[in-house]
Length: 244
Image 1 (cartoon, one colour):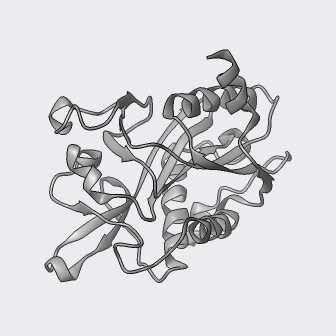
Image 2 (cartoon, rainbow, N blue to C red):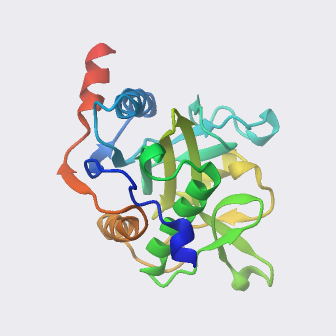
C-alpha cells in the first residue's frame, strides 16, 4: 500500500532525469540561478528533468516562513532568501544537497504526496546505513531517535524545502553526512526549538559522500524511476556564470 502511495514514477513518456554531481563547493546564488533556468526549460519542454547533487560553502538560507527570531547570529554566515517553503536552514561542506527538478505534471501533480515521497526517499537511503529515519506529524523532514540523550530525545538528520512553479519542482533535500554541526547554532533549524541536529558520522556511521550518493541514487530509482547519470555540472551553471 505504501509503495503505491509514494510512487512518483513518470506516468507520461519522456527522457529520464539527468543525475548530476558537482565536485567542489557551488556558490548558492549561482546554484539558484541555474535551477531557475533549468526549471523554466523543463516546464517549456526544452530540457529533461534533473537531480543535481552538490555542496555549498557555509551559509544560512531563509525560507518563506522564516522569522527574525530564529536567526540567532546574524554575522556568522551569509544569509540568502531561498524562495522555498520552510524557515532557516544551514548548508555547508559535508552536507549533501540534492536539488530535485521534476515535472509533476507527467508524474503526479500532488504537492503533499511529493513531500511524502521525498521523505521516503531519504528514509530508504538512510536504511542502507542501518539508520532508522522517521517522519514527525506536522514537521517536514526526517528525524532519528536519540535514546542516549533521553527517552524522548530526537535529532533531525535531513531537511526538505521545495518550490513548485508550473508543476515543476526545484530546491529539494539536504542530508547531513559529515557537516560541522556547530554551525547550526546560529539559527533555530527549520523553526523547531528543542530537538537537535545530527549526521551519519555523528551517529557512528563513517559514511563518505560517494557512499551517501550511491544510497540516494538507489533509493531514488525505487520511488521516482530511472535516471541518466552524467558527469560534471549542469550546463546551466556555466551559462549563469557567463552572465554574471
